[in-house]
Each structure stands twice: as C-alpha cells, then as structure tokens.
Length: 329
Length: 147
Image 1: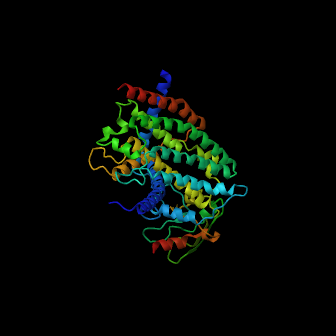
Image 2 (image 1 turned 90 degrees about the vertical axis):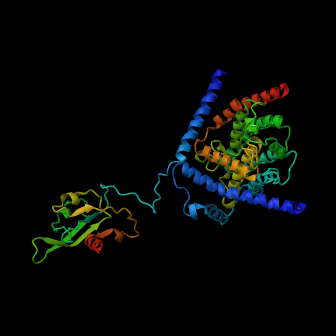
Image 3 (image 1 turned 60 degrees about the vertical axis):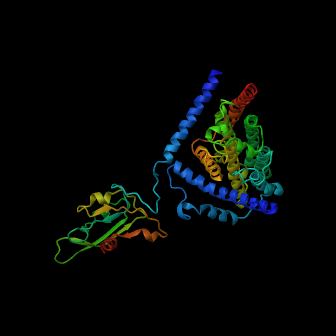
C-alpha cells in the first residue's frame, strides 16, 4: 500500500507526535509504578483503575497553571528552551525504523542525524538554565555541559566502532544486516570484536548520562540544586521539559535497539516486525527505570572520572580492536 | 593496569548485585498498607482516650461513682456525678465527662479504679474542628455502643 507522498508524511508526523506524546505521558506512569514496585509500595492508584488516568490528571493540572517568566530572565530564551528539548526528540523519530515499511524518511545518514539532533538537548537545558537567571539553574547548566561533553566522546567512539562493523549510517540498512536470529545482532558479533557486549554497556551508560537520567542526573540534583535548570519553570514549561526527558529516553532506547539489538528483527528468526522493536524498546526502558531506582546519584567528579578514566580508554580500545580485526580477517 | 582492571570488574559486579537485589524486591508482594482503604489491627497496649467498661450481665457500666479517678487524675480532666438508686447496693454514675484536650493518657484513672470500670479505647481517628469535640461524655458513648 503506497499513499501519495504528502499524505504519507502527514500521517507520519501525526503518528510520531502521538507516539511521543503517549510515551512521554505513560512513561511517567510506568516510572512511578516501577518505583513503587521496587520499593514495595502500591504507587498511583486513585485516578482511574491502577492509576492509569494519573498522567492525564497531571497534564490537566500543569496546563491550568500560569506560565511565569521570572523578572530579569531572558524571556525569549526562557520560553524557547522547553521547545528546544522536545522538538529535536520528535525530529529523531523521522529516521527511526519501527519495521521494514514503517520509517518516515529512510535517510542514508540517519545515524548522523539522530546524533546531530540529540546534541541540541544539551544546549536547550543550558539555555533554560542560563535564561532563568537563577543561581541553581546556572550551576545546573554548567554541569549539564561538562557532563555531556564528557559522555559524548565515548558515545561517539562506540558508534564509530559500530560504523566500522556495519559500514553504513542508514538505520534501516543496519537493521537489515542483523536479520535471522539473535546471534546475528551487533551485540553478539564477537567474531568482529570480542568486546562487543562491552561496547553495548558503554553505549547504554552514555545514553543514561546524555539523557540526564539517574544515577547521572546531576542537572536536577534535588538535594543540592532544587530542580536544577528547571527551577524557575512553572506549569507546562516544566511539563514540556519533563516530556522532553522521556521523549529523549525513548529515542535513546530506540537507537540502542536498532544499533545493537536488531531493531525490528526477530530474535528467533520468525515474524519480524514492529512488535519486536517495541518489545525490545520497552525492555530497555524498563532497565532504565530499574537502574534509576537501584543506584544513588553519583558525585560530580565521580561522574567525570568514570567517563575520562574508564569509558573513553575502553571505548578507544574497542575501536582499535575492531579496526585491527576487520583489517586482518 | 591490573589494579585498574580489577577495580572496573569489581565495580561491575557490585552494580549487578545491586540490580539483582532490587529486581528481587520488584517481584515480592507489597508491604505498605493503603491506609484509608485498609487498616492495620491496633495493638492491645494502644492507649486511646479512656472509656467505660460494660458489665456483660446487666449491660450497664461497672462504675460505682466513687470518684477515685477524679481524684487520681493529675490534670483534673475527669468529672463524675452519681446517685444511689432504689434497690441497689451501690451508686451508679449519672454523668461521666472527660476533657480529652487536657488528658495526657497517663492511665492513673484506669489503675486506681476499684471495679475495673475504665479502660483505654482503641480510637485513633480523633481529628476535630472544635474544642468541644474533645469533651467526651463517656456514659453517652456507652449507651451508643449498646444500641
């Protein structure tokens, strides 16, 4: 079935926005329920069955609140920052392959595009913190920048390792190469690089750091920085930041699925399709929640030490190892 | 080099142990009680405000209006009045007021009572909007419990 191009694009725009919106709203519910289960509490139960209407109630509450721009703040940048968090995350869904046919725009530089847009997230949080004219927000902005600079490097080194293996930046093509069972996934390609599972772990750690998730949530370390860069935001300004965070997690986990876990390919070789993609995606997201409620927040220098002293050398080593193996065999 | 590698591996192992523990907790039944919907049983030694014990035979209070509790109370928050009814060997109370705003739940009244007519109740939902809500009429409470 092929629709005329404008209709196809319109459907994908609406579809991507609905997918991101739904995920951003309901991941909050998943997060709260998950946290509750890990701590053996019931979690939200009052609004709707099992608290399923809680995200809608929260959204209505946030929408009904006044958007306050503090005096002395840079009003334009202050209002722009939440949008800048949300919009790039939405853009990334244009190239992510949900299934063989379900890609909005199969680009041959898809991977590059995702990383290009992914970096805007950092700038947006920094802008938000800077424009707030609040000391907590500015400290948070400074932390976000140094943290993300530190973690972008091992992340990209890992991706370069992967590019050496796949030889293409087209996400759809990367998935196609991993057809036919889980042993063909990039995660298990140990004959190309015996340290492939390690690269996946590095990728995942960097993903947590890039999306400012616990235990790397230095940007909004409540105990020391109030709410970090989001301190001055009220109502839906804060709401959009919050949704943007979850949208970025979805993008990151989608990317991890596509790059390492075979995307929409079936692990047992039968019935490949979007359901496998979604299953893997949500398993990864569950792991993100699981990690958040297991580990306490690291100290800031611990965070930078982990990146500069461990992740970067190890990822450089895997890059070297992969290129040597590829050249020799 | 060997030290650094060992540190990384040890760190990884401790991270995995941590995650295993939380996952085990994830599948265990929840331990919190969802308060207004569920409540825990009140322990025997819980001290609510005092209340009158009912005589299981007559259905009336065991109190003989001797006023020992009134005298024993360090805060003076108990007020008892009684009469000797015709055909009865003992007095019976006509009024038994407790000013719970001043009660410190010391239990002197319960201890001193010669007929064991007083005990601690198990009431803990005692939020009120006026001072008068805490002037408790124990006789009325006893009759209300009967019906």
